[in-house]
Image 1 (cartoon, rainbow, N blue to C red):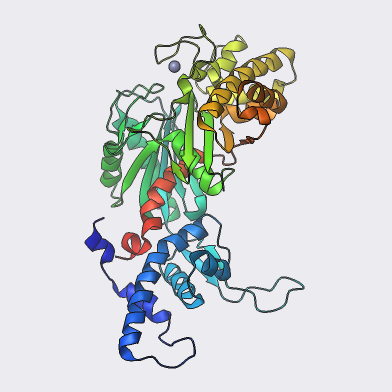
Image 2 (image 1 turned 180 degrees about the vertical axis):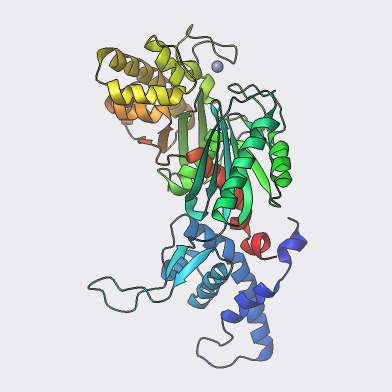
Length: 434
Ligand SMILES: [Zn+2]
């Protein structure tokens, strides 16, 4: 968006302004010039506060108008006008007469909640075993999901066409308004080009323009909305930071298995750290077992091939099938107490611990979240994992880095939705009300 568009006024701006009132604090009418000046200021402040206000409600940090007022640092009147504007856009609901908690005195503040019937975005994920489409509302709420299974062929247009078609079917079923589309892929995504740089676990050519292909499919489906693409683990980390176990962390490290392989992400002050060309945090290629399994990257013994679902199945002498993540997790859930499974879990846990210790030394995170099979390993052998990290890391020795399970079941899909919601969060009026 250019500066001219950002400054453009629509009739809705006037509502923000006029709703805030034109009287001074002591209730007397102000002189026309002063009033005009005050209105202009409030107009800009009101419009400028719409995005931050929506983000506060979106991330669960403003449950009432009183909290919103204080978090934004504006007057009650401005906060009221901002909340009313977001409600008129169909994004939130304002309950002006909430029931007072038992035993409390005084009038409770207006309650703010996301509109359960509000717009949605189309979120799509492609992984080694297929794809999934979902409709996601504000607040990371999954409104509908559509499982899909398909061999991911060499032409990204095939599977991206299927996932968009699945999303379109969900939109038809639910009748919801779609305001954007986001895609998570198992590859680093170069910015600003939107190309998949290293799709090791799907057969796409390196450098495939996945964002442009996805955008073309979204538009071909008749959806006139912006479309975005990002790396699946980066997006999962963003979702965890906004809606899950990463809330409040300033240097959040996320390590997770995909359906195959291992990815990592670092969210610094709310933004994924992507490096100079989108390739940062390729933690999958840390060597944790010199001379170990050959890796897709050309090396050996990488975290990617030593701690992913396939590695667990191989450690147990099994032939990995089509759905390795589910097979590995089912094995641990059903047979975790058997000596052979226990030994395989401990082997993978030790290798994961070595990788995490190296990352702790390099990145000094204040929280680590584990996802996919790594979340299962943490649940199965928490003390062992913590001990390896503490033993091998400079900063971890103090035991001060919390290692937690990722909280969201479909973090990459929710993160893909965050990409699609971002223009609305940045400027709700420009994105929806223009
Ligand atoms: Zn590797």
